[in-house]
Amino acid sequence: MNKILTFANQKGGVGKTTCALNIAACLARSGKKVLCVDSDPQGNLTSGLGVSKRCGGDTVYDVLIGRVKASEAIVKTQVRGLNLIPSGMTLVGAELELVDEENREYRLRDALSLVKDEYDYIIIDCPPSLGLLTVNALAASDGVVIPVLCEYFSLEGLSQLSITIKQIKKLYNPALELVGVLINMFDGRLNLSLQVMEEIKRYFRDKLIATPIPRNVRISESPSHGLPVTEYDRNSKGAAAFAMAAREIDKRCGGM
Image 1: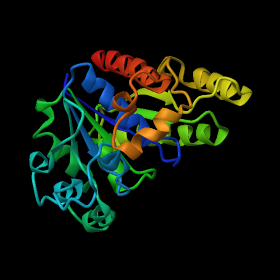
Image 2: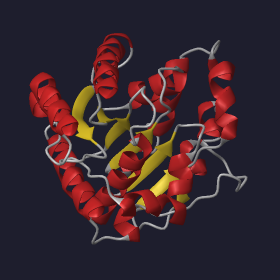
Image 3: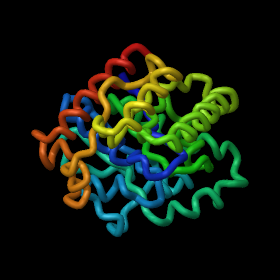
C-alpha cells in the first residue's frame, strides 16, 4: 500500500501524538510494516515508543538538513514491525536553518521517498503549529488524520486546519487527502461531547472516523512505560478502540 499519513492539529493538547503512536502500533500488530517519524521537537512519540531522546543517535533533524539518509536514522522499537525515526531538541533549530534553503518544503518528502517502498505505512507526528516542520510533513503525505477533542475550541482548530490542507494541496501537494477526523478522549456521559460529535458529523460527514477514542487511564499510563496501550494493556477499552479506528483508517487508505 505504501501510504504516508500525517497526524496533525495546530491546536495543542488534543492527544495527537497518542493517536499517532497507537494507530501505528495497531497497524503493526495487524501485520503491516510501519515506520513512525517524530517530527515534533518535544519528542513525545520517541519516548512513548521507549526510545531515549538522549541516545545520541541520528534523528529527523539530521535527515532534514541532509546530514544522513532516512535509512541511517531508523531505529527499531519494542513493537514488532514498527520502526522509528526519532526526534530530539536539535529539531528546534531546523526551521531556522532551512528557511533560506531551496525546496525547503520538500526535504522530508525527498528523504522518505528512499524508504517509502519498504513500509506499508509511514506515520508522521508533527508539532502543534503550522510552521515549516508541519508543512514538510503535509507535503510528504498521501493523507491527513486530524485528532480532535469534543470541545468547541477544537472545532475552531479543525476549521482552520481544513483551510490549511486546501492551501497545501494547492501550493505543494495536490495528492494530499483528508483521511479522517478522529475524536479523542471521548466521554459519552457528557452532553457537550455528544453535541460536538454531532457538529463534526454535520460538517465532515463521511470523514468522521466511526470509533471515538474514550478517556481511558491505561492510555494515559502507557507512555510512561515506553509502550503503546496495545502493548501495555491489550485488553483495555482504549486498546480496543484504537484497534477499531486503525482498521477503519487502513480501509480508507485502501481506497485512496
